[in-house]
Amino acid sequence: MCELLGMNANVPTDICFSFAGLMRRGGQTGPHSDGWGITFYDGKGCRSFHDPRPSAESEIARFVRGYSIKSTNVICHIRRANRGRVALENTHPFIRELWGRYWTFAHNGQLKGVKNLTLSAYLPVGTTDSEHAFCWMLDRLRERWDRPPAHKSLCREIRRLAEELNGRGVFNLLLCDGQSLFCFCSTNLAWLTRRYPFGNATLLDEDLTVDFAQETTARDVVSMVATRPLTRDEDWTIMDKGSFVVFRDGSCL
Amino acid sequence: MCELLGMNANVPTDICFSFAGLMRRGGQTGPHSDGWGITFYDGKGCRSFHDPRPSAESEIARFVRGYSIKSTNVICHIRRANRGRVALENTHPFIRELWGRYWTFAHNGQLKGVKNLTLSAYLPVGTTDSEHAFCWMLDRLRERWDRPPAHKSLCREIRRLAEELNGRGVFNLLLCDGQSLFCFCSTNLAWLTRRYPFGNATLLDEDLTVDFAQETTARDVVSMVATRPLTRDEDWTIMDKGSFVVFRDGSCL
Image (tube, rainbow over all chains, first blue to last red; front, side, top):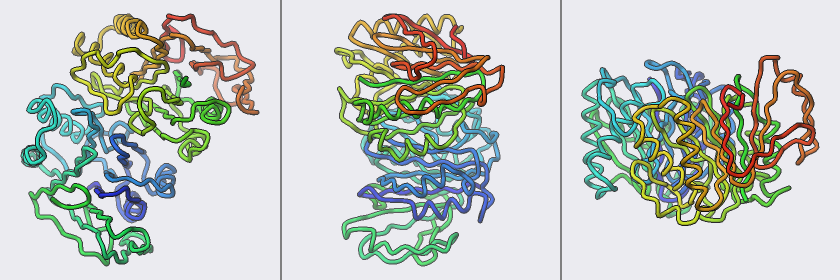
């Protein structure tokens, strides 16, 4: 199983603390040793780091961990390959442009026969089921709307597409357009929102505690989503199977 | 003016030496202080580093310079903003998928009225003329062919599109699909091919010499393209205005 991590915040926020915990799961405290990737949005732009090597040994991961990149939207993925060989082009998150925005996608699970779904405007570069599913989702959105629709309609349609894909197997999804973070729970996904008054948090995977009160202002609102809770002393919501949530400006809508 | 750097090689090759010289031009030995970006292909995948800050001060640039990433195709760009504000989404190279391949694009120059060109399948995320021109080129290629055409036809069409854009101003272009490096010289572009027997090279912008004989095997063929020659003791070909070259497997076709 792969590990997913997402963040959505109302102000640019440093994800290093959560990233530190997740990276340990990549070949050290967890079995996810077939590469990793992370995308940070900065305005409409985004920067991505991908490495087909285990995150726990990755020089790029060490750099990202030490370099404070503040972002309002982040998607991160640690891969345990099941379909598609270990290669850079098979490393999540995948990125495509739709309606003049960069969309990023990370998935854990398997999807039976997903490559039978016909694609048109978007084609996969690698060989994973996940990238095929992403291209199919964007194709459907593009076919339906020439430009971004009302947010509620968009959320409804993404949920419907996620449910359709989930019918083929396991489809835990993080999808982001740089504004909203769309999350579908097939089997495992948990989230929490940090807001004033901030407290302490201790990583489950590493002996590291952070006092968010020192790192934030009273107005900051930050939501985190992950395959499994990352901290031991915070109140994570374990998502129900088949449920869907959207975060915007740091809050669950 | 921006600075361009491209590499095409028949075996994965380390570009650090040339990158070191170029990065000094970003706000130190040159006036190109509005960000920089670099894309390295690895198989069909690619990794990109972008930073809207001057390359000479960039932590990411220092990391890239110190981290030996071997690649067969590289495109690098240092930006001096003329259209479009300094922002991550306006930082070259731009990347899009066409025919199941990642295409990367870097440009220096200005293009009058390029935003009047109608776009369909690809839309810019940022506000530069360059990204608009890139989207327009890919639109034309996609409209003409459903799948990759014969290489000669592709080269001819890319040249034709580059000439058309060049009619609107200055269009020095590096374009790569992960296999070939397509280069159009509007005003400034120079290239050289390094092959056996390899010699020494000394950077113009930094007191640094490398003996390529120590770094290579007799079969390696590596071509470099840059806005201006990067080394003092090698035989660069200064391209004629309006000329077009394509590199593949390290050699000029």
